[in-house]
Image (cartoon, rainbow, N blue to C red; front, side):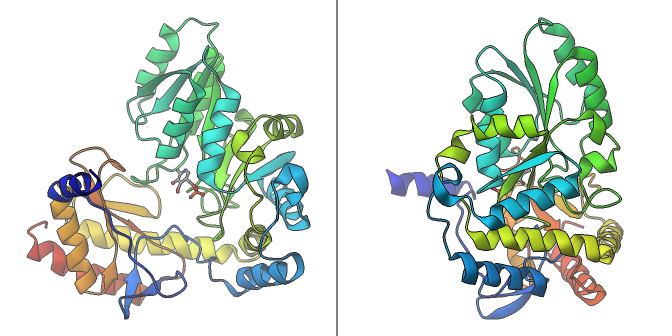
Length: 386
Ligand SMILES: Cc1ncc(COP(=O)(O)O)c(C=O)c1O
């Protein structure tokens, strides 16, 4: 049965395989004994291997050990966890923060803590899978609105019984498309119709907004959205998820979220690494500036080449290819030319929108970007895509 299932996936060009990177993640990595330019990581600010971040992880491991030993609520809540939550709340400008072992765990446990069977969830069609899973687990009635379509969202809001508890769910930056949710409009609609908003700012955290606080800062709606979710696993170069909000909200989550209660606390190293990353973000704003400069160089180069691009506004720059086998061919050709950017296929993205999801970081040099563009030009021509 396993074999047949895998064969069916193979026949549809949808089989997935692990590839092992034999180096730290960075602008270049070692893959199959070759150095290749990496254009698909979420390590946007290059902090995963930043010396201050690595050093903090090593120091925390020496002092607090490799594992936390228990869940946070039993005896696994260590000084590095508390220090991270304090630093993150300060960065976010909220009263409190609660961290989770993964962004995925935050989404699948916080959404069911916010709404139940009697409620209604209205989610953007392109929400991340972890949000969808959280919505399903909540047991609430679940409807999707067309991607970033505020008329559709308003239609759904206006048609529901006004007393029905309602949660609007969206990504801040959409993970596979790179565009940004219209948070101002969403917040206004939520206020008008008495709905709550749950935004997942996994990809906006650290890179969007004047100080890097994320999508809500970028859209100037922080005071209108009382809580939000994000991750430590992307621009912060570590691992974990978080919820930022009022002290009461956070205390409520501590007492309701099953994926907080029933899992071992994250390793001290990852908490300390994320705290150190927040320090780097504060001390080195030039990293964010460099990221956006690099993003412009890559985006302009891609438009010049004539690829079919998604309408991105972020360092995520997807080339939409369509069929999964064509996306795989493009990824394979790019790899032979020294660029690693795997194909993203259904069910991660909707049918017929298989793509190469390029993502750029602050640590890429102009030479890396130009070399990648030359590879993309050659691969695109060889495969009749441009
Ligand atoms: C939008 C979004 N939310 C949540 C997650 C899950 O976060 P984590 O990788 O920390 O589990 C991801 C990525 O993996 C994501 O892209």
